[in-house]
Image 1 (cartoon, each protein chain N blue to C red):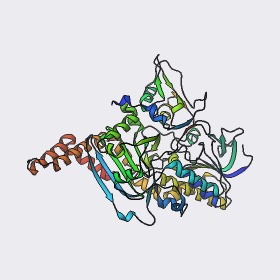
Image 2: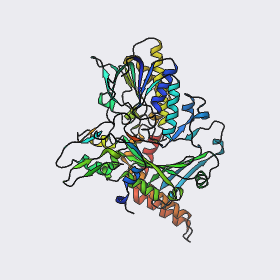
Image 3: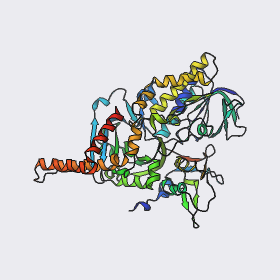
Image 4: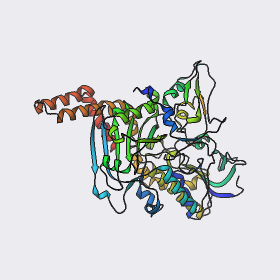
Length: 97
Length: 435
């Protein structure tokens, strides 16, 4: 088994989420070519929320976000992403933590 | 939101926030605590180990009703290369005492219980409420918070920021810096469920005895990081953490490292056949003493992970959170009892009390270690573990080579990898930082 074959989606499936539909708490700033910081998120995000789209931009899907803040630490200072916590009650709900 | 005024608002219902709210409420202060999760603990992630002494100071008889997993009778340290580990174990029957010293816990369950104690003490706790901003007066004094509830502004004399390592409020208000990638580690963890008897057999335990394994070496691939395996009653907490700056530099993935750690021949047999029921991730403050921000100001205090209060060397975080939360609350209670205003000058009592506690003394002792580990990670987490493992194998494998020749091979391998000067300077720097 290679590392790229680790299925993060399967891991996230164990978790409970209450998704705040239509109100993502993390947003990526519009860009043509992703910055170094945005590229780093493709690998560093433990929930693999960041992906490249067909035209080469970094997109975020927050449904599986575990709210760790790694992407905030890496990419908020450069303005590449806008980071907030989900509204009260929404987001990941750890049973064990 | 709530049309009343409070003596204090606590942001967050983790270890630090609960300790602070409990202490203030018990002394008769009118306390509001705000937590963004559905219940306390629903957003909290930890390994997790609870140190009894710090908890006893808050709830002396917590052992009778708190959801605890196993009390620890054994600690293992593993230095790993890809196929082996060199280990040190400490196991003592003295840890099977009347009032055990350390327990494994499951944070979501423990925090829920802890929060019920905070409510019983008289704190008003609002869950599912995200604080979005600090409210300040024209001179910049913190006078309360704004939340995501309708008409969500609420006022108090003092705000305790127990918002965790990734706290947005304090950094947005300019009270402290946002953590930088070299000052926080990202840890990922899975909960592996197995029958109780299986866990006890695999870890050599009886009844509620527990074991902790801390592992370092090539598992982090030259990055500053560690793996951990904690035995709970019916599950095993298994995780791996490395500095965010190292993840960024190397392009390694957190789940890739975790999977690699799970497949290590020393680890795999412990979890074989388990059912995974949760995958979590969390940042851990790693900056140590030098990363501690301003701890108080006009109308506010910061406690726990939000204040970078974590002893990474001893892996003590939640007890520093519990203690700083309690001490902050005691300082506030003191100022409040004299009817003094919650100014920065008066709240500086918190810093004085914290400086006199083990929290700051311990962090000060290791003030140079984070930098040493972070700048020499290839040596400490890749080169040395490989050398030590090879030396051990050479030492124990009997193959007709004279022992004197075996010794020469080992010494030569160390010198070749690091040179005499390198070895000497690593040893000196480590000793100096540890002292």
